[in-house]
Image 1 (cartoon, rainbow, N blue to C red):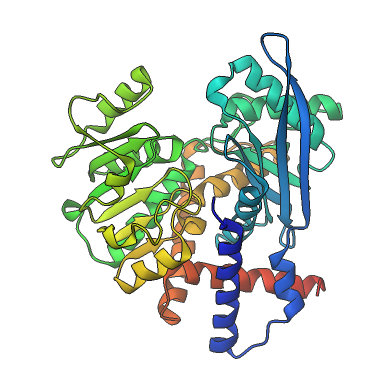
Image 2: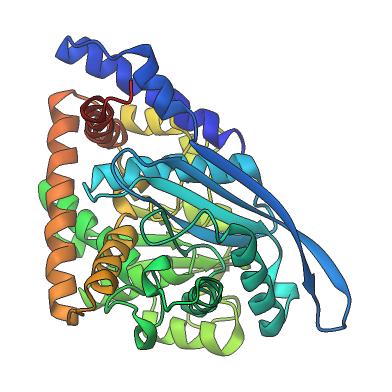
Length: 418
């Protein structure tokens, strides 16, 4: 993630300037500085015994960015490109995201530099437990609550919770979210990111008065978020003409049968070779003549290099940081509506919040209650961000940041932190 943290800080500075200019209020330098620096950064190396009996050393990170509105909250990703700059950027975005949807969390993020495709399940389990052991003293239900992210899932969270519980000597389901339902997970958590993204997309579609039959969708990324967004959109009769995974994409102008594509992906481990569509690259997918583009893979895929070729009129950022700031400004000038990641993919942390509440209360909700509450928060958050962006005549990303930063600075002032 090239200079992602600095990109986030530039967005912070830009937002603070707008707030001060438009509202004619003064934000103290020290208040901004609190939001510019993570509270705690942990980098740790730890050995893991591989299946062949040899030890291998891995590097893991946890960045606890800001807890002025509540405990740190953020996922853990296992990926070969994980480094400290990336984790800091993601932790910063989590701080903003939790404030955008107004849930009582701060922001954090963690990760391990590893290619899990080269590890067995037993090795991934030992890796997870080793990471928990080095981080156990800085996490906890009232301190820092991790969750799944890229190449981590409910099983990894189950191992995480189990190891932490053994270390502390007491069963502690609230230490992580995104767990299997059998051990304290929440209904609706596995589809929450996609479902939240669909709610805000449909809100925008209605605002712009675009009919369903006028919509064509391309989705880059077919992991949890992208796959479930495709499934939800298809179930609501939207036409999806392109999807892709890390190996490449498939395209059919008449529409892709998503159920058959999911079945093919599960059986073959990739989308390439699906006979009911033609193959395209991930780069080509981004530039297709669709009116809705959903980047749901990794960061920095829409930049100054390809922004002029983007033809979509609506971009739903299910991935974290898929659009650079400069590219986002160019898109705004072209009349493209970008639903920013800090709103579009916030459904995951919202339902994580629900899971945490259920764990603490030892009282669990049915799927209907989860969906009703998720719908309420996402619809309300969209309305606030939309109205703010319209009021200040800016893009939705800046509208989201204005909403979040005002809440964060108010919390700093009320707590007397600056």
